[in-house]
Image (cartoon, rainbow over the protein chains, first blue to last red):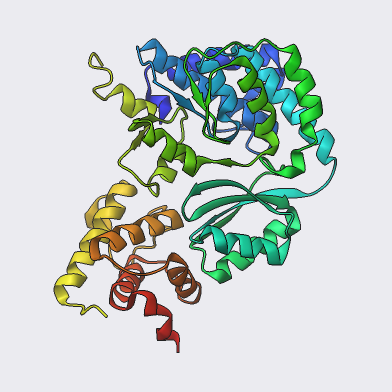
Length: 288
Length: 102
């Protein structure tokens, strides 16, 4: 856990206070044990973002300079801060405005997402076509691991049928927003308008697009990626393969929870995913 | 169809015990056939999947994940002992696992 990184708890509080002052004073009530905001999607995103920024800042301050950055889902905002493309405060504004656009588009409709492990892409496509063709594969985590977005009723049906088809693991995700799917396409207009007003710089450290695995080098590419990230499927599996093809073998997950580390167990190649704490204790930091 | 010997069973048992001891950060001596994977070890189905991958590589098994999934729906696994038994069946029958149902 990143809480064990020297300085994590103190820096997290600093960032939390900044976020509370900048975007929403309710964030100051965050407490991992008592008031963790897990029932509130927007606050949950703020907290995950603050945690990631805390991890990456600490690693940078210890002298780690990654060759490239990659992001998973809404981790795009923290990766942009680490790349030097946006400020911490701009990241908070992006989260707030993206969520506002999403809620405007969805109104009171019931959407959700699910995770299915153990079926291949053809099985998943067949499941979708015979349940609700509008449902979309919003991310592929591995050869047999997928995330789907769609109407809540369709997602529930797919989860049930996936088990009957032989999925080893299925879970209905605790979100009401169909991220990375066409259902959020309409957000592009309002969100583009907002993005047009903010300061985005060329990244100092390059970022790999999780959508099409191209390297994001310019302000224009980043702005376009920010807009697309809400409504376009991404592919973590291809991102992983692309990183390996580029010669990267060691990845540090900038989060207190080992989500990508778990996913990596089922990914091909000899690459290693490690936590920030493991990174600090590794030969990457000979003085630690 | 692979021939299952006592040595295979011991090997599978050792792999499973070592895997859960490491993954769940518990003393291997605390794990028994009756240990409940979810309640006692806080394990999950992703661990089950990882174990399958380990055995597929080790024994060069020809079996689709969904074959195992379909079998598991009818024969759910909750204890270490049940998991070992299922792994033995997978090694023995591979993609013919579902024929055991007939």
